[in-house]
Image 1 (spheres, rainbow over the protein chains, first blue to last red):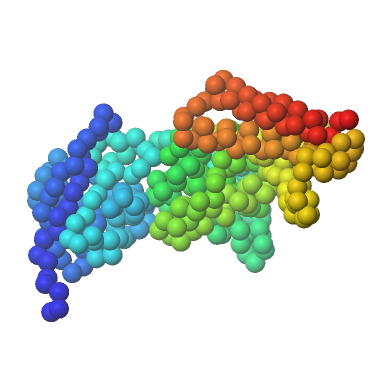
Image 2 (image 1 turned 135 degrees about the vertical axis):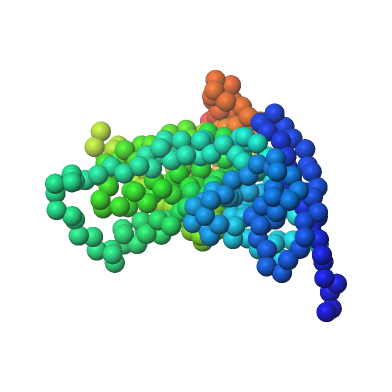
Length: 245
Length: 110
């Protein structure tokens, strides 16, 4: 073997709560195949049972295990240690831009409240008594809606967003992408309500198109393009309304 | 800190400025051929309705554009909000408008 095999990782974990915290270092056995979530679980199971963190599915579907790893937001269950290791060191911290509850668990409420604020909820065109509407999967509108449908609400994009960091009221990439998906959904009516919801002082127009959301999205979605779409449609509606006024 | 109205105002003022910037630079390159003097500039601009409108529009667009741009920076970097932020936005806009307006009038009015 060219490189000396490392038997242990030096893992620094941010511990604390809303009032502040401090870093704590743990020595964790190194394995060939190991995710960041495995490392955190090892610490909780074998070193310090008081370590608080959050996970559920362990296969990248539920979106609950995101954390900052070496300063970058990641879904920890699908992030291999080898991919992000700095020497033999790891730094694991709670997600950025959200209030810490304890240790690695953040309060996701502000994140989900903004989904609702951006009208990221279904506004049905029909009732349950109507026949099911046929949707052409090839249509441009449907393709646009499909592009953002695989969002798992992990908040990695929200943690990556420097605009949220500077402007805490900003709705953020995930909520706006949801709004854009629904805007393009033929089974969702009241499109102007969505455009109005994303046009306020905390809306899509605050985005600086820095692209961290798209860069870090673990599902390779493109929230930046969705926000650009909303900017385009709101601008059109701005002129439309002037004309009709 | 930008709603749709401010966003549109900043985008439209940018679109107004784009051709004016090009015109301004082109005139600068043309005007300095064979030296540059106050008399030469004033002979071109004084009493000219065209240059009054050209730079008058430029000043209005700059005042709107810069005030909104600095508003965003003041909010994100200095955490300014509410009345203080509105005051800063209007203050910057008005100062630029008055200073620019005075300069335009000084070189175009007879």
